[in-house]
Image (cartoon, rainbow, N blue to C red):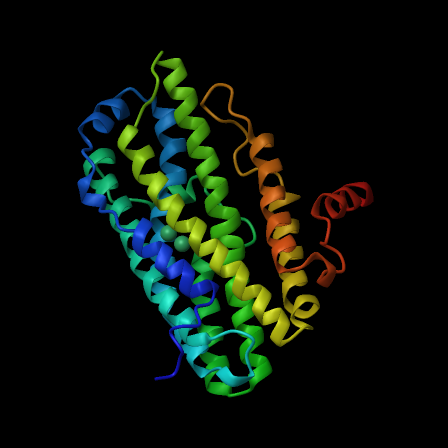
Length: 309
Ligand SMILES: [Fe+2]
Ligand SMILES: [Fe+2]
């Protein structure tokens, strides 16, 4: 037996939490009411809502298909030289991949039964231009991990894992997906207000609430591993984390919004932008601000960049 199951680390505790909170079934939601609500959306509203849902549907499939190499890479680490137990993290990821499959399952059912299509490409090409990093890029990240496993160099492997966790948990889950939830919240709230109702797409909201709860654990685990890898290889922050964050800031936070106009009256993109900056700050704080040269204070770094432009 490789691990002492009495000594439970963060990842193991999150795995236990997932057993209690992550047990839900996408098939249990009655979608009848959502189908009726969807008929009340205008064509422009549908296009916009479907664009975000398509990003999620594709994205959930992408994260499901690209997580396995993370487990293999953890297993290739010399565990006695690591500040954390890779096997406990492998157990955590075994749970995560099941949860990601379930998220894909939910969107698959929702597209079929409410939207009446399995088509996502046209919505994504039609405006959902991912700037900088997209879940499609997770396949390259997974390939890089496999190459680092084959390479057999400890530092290379830790660096590849750091890059992979930052891409997957630090950017895709903590930034892109959470930006999407905030967008859903606003669109649904504004539509309900317009219809003089308390809520619309209630089953969607309920299921997405479960997805978000799962994702909160994924993000927390990801941050913890990023922090642990920085203990193992302190230079990883300057060599991998900061350049990767820089890229995200450049392509997302400083870039023009993807959509010029939103058909949902009163939609506030700026509010979402501010929240995304806070999310990034939370990640940096968790890993350890003192380890960061430029992004210890994200807001200040952004202001500096704005002033320079
Ligand atoms: Fe997910
Ligand atoms: Fe996730």
